[in-house]
Amino acid sequence: MMPRMHLHVLASGSKGNASVVEGPAGSVLIDDGLSRRELLRRADELGVDMNRICCVVVTHEHADHVSGLTVFCNKYEGRLVATAGTAGGRKYLAKLPFELVGDADEFEAGGMRVRTFPTSHDVADPFGLRFDCGAGEDADSLGFCTDTGMLGDRALELLSGVRILALESNHDAHMLATGPYPGFLKQRIAGDHGHLSNDQAAAALRELIGPDTETVVAMHLSEENNRPSVAVRTLAAAVGAEAANSTFTEARTADGRLTICAAAQARPMSVWQRG
Image 1 (tube, rainbow, N blue to C red):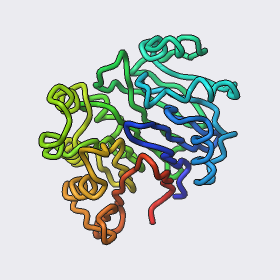
Image 2 (cartoon, rainbow, N blue to C red; image 1 turned 180 degrees about the vertical axis):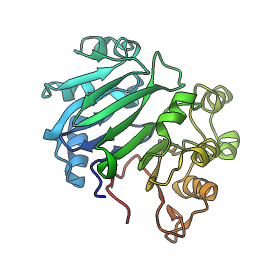
Image 3 (cartoon, rainbow, N blue to C red; image 1 turned 90 degrees about the vertical axis):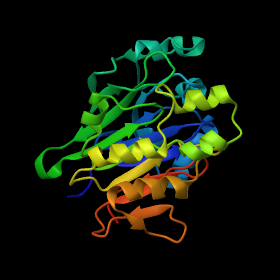
């Protein structure tokens, strides 16, 4: 089965986030926390055609997810999708023509069925996403979830068994506890409305990985409280994967069917298909 959807992570982390899900009839931009110039430069580096963007989805209103949105929309006439809480979360967002959805809703974009699920973060009304297209042997699926302190029942249901799983693995609990952040910030990050740790993401993988899952991308890694090798090693241990390179920034199961890698703040990456 040839994949019908591709994931392009242009940036993932506390300094700016933007990802593109490429579908059979168009592409969806998830969040825009980059300048227009940097967004387009990174897209060009990966060979991503931004003229195919037919929908922009905003998961929540934190600046690292929306700071580039107003400028991007100056030359964009497609759909903007967010919850009412997100659209009203900042004055400049309230001026944009959002199509409002709920955090347990669904809509169509780029030839893909898009379903939302609530996430747990210290903002108004955040959500994660599942994308599906095709049917039978031509079916394809992708799950996307960052900026959440926990995974609820709907999140676990919709993220289960997807071919590409982009899941937050923000921090190593020991690095966070012994690191330089002040106590209140450590509590926020580690709390139920903060960010998933490597251990939490690893525990979730045991439930989420299915026979069709080919790639897990560790997302939104903290530059202070995590390392790509630490995150990948922790996730790999949960599913019996072994190092696929000398730096343990990629892991693979013995049968070669499942790959684990990590997205980065400064290095864009694409996920196409197994191998």
